[in-house]
Length: 241
Image (tube, rainbow, N blue to C red):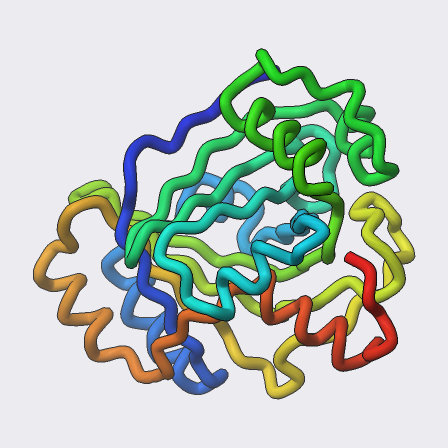
C-alpha cells in the first residue's frame, strides 16, 4: 500500500451554483486557470466515493451540528476504474481541511464493503490505523455511495484548486461501489453545481476578485450528508447505515 499525504490544512470555500451561474463562473475561471492533470487527460472525470459512518452516525450528526473538528473516511475511485483506489481520511478544523490517503487493492476495497477488514493492516499508515480503530471501536461501516462528474482547474501560486462538481447522485440500491448496476438518484434534480475553492494561505488578488464575483449560495453542507438525506428521503424506512 502507498500512502499519500496531501500536506497541511487548506482553506475551503463552497458555493452552490445554478446552471447559469456555473456557465458564467466556468467561462471566467477557465480563461485564467489551467485544467488539472486529470482534466487534461480525461476532460470532466467521474468520481465515485463510498463514505463510512459508525453505529452512532457520528460523521453525519457531527456535520449537522457544526462540530468544529471532525473527520470522515471514504473509499474513492475515478472513472469506474480499479486502477486507482484510495482509502481517504478528510479532516476539517474550522474553515480548513486536510486530506490524507492510502492506496488499497480492489480485493481490499471489496472486502471492506462486505464487512471484512482482514486485508487492511494498521501498520500500513496512519489512515489505516485510525480507520481500523474506529471499525472495531465504534462499528465503522459503509454508509452511502456518492457519484458526480468533476471539472477541475489549478493555479500554482497559492496552490489554488477550483472544482465544479456536477450531477451529484446518491446510491440507493446498496453500498457496493463496484456494482455496475447500482441504482442512484439525483441529489439536485434542478442541476445545481457545487463549486469548491481550496487554497493554502492566500489566493492571488485577481483570482480572489473573480471568485468573489461569482454568484451562488455559500454552503457548508457536505456531499456525504446531502446524499444521506436523499437516501433517507426516498427510503424513510432505512434505519441501518
